[in-house]
Amino acid sequence: MTADALLSILEAELDTGAALVDTLERQRVALVERDLDRITELTDILAGQFGHLNTLLQMRESAMRDEPDTDDARAAMMRRVRRVEACVINQAAVNQTLLADRLAYVAAMLGALLPDHPAYGAAEGRVPRASGPAVSRSA
Image 1 (cartoon, rainbow, N blue to C red):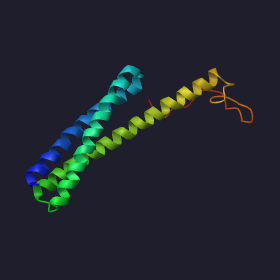
Image 2: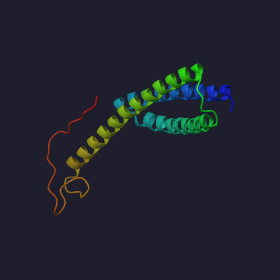
Image 3: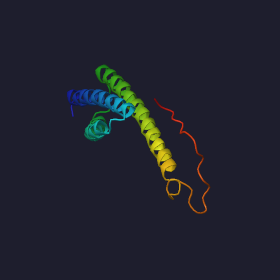
């Protein structure tokens, strides 16, 4: 594989990473707004984007095994790719926290509505859950 081919892969990673950051941001907004239809739509888009990024990562790994030497252009591009990857990871972590908060809220509300249900309330042999409002860490 030529250096140009590796640079092409890195450029594709940058483009895909930037698209992922944008989609993750739109997912965050949908989570905050509790827009379930939009969340579902964006989750499907994210699955495709992450799949494409995974393919590019495998291609890069293979290309770097074939040509391990790094020139200045590749090194600079790798730094840009790493910054975008960090943004993707950070945004995904924020969204994961929001999702966890939403699920905890739903579980708390189900516990309040169904106090005798084994999954949500006090079942035989289980200590009843504390009553009162649920605390959320997110917006």
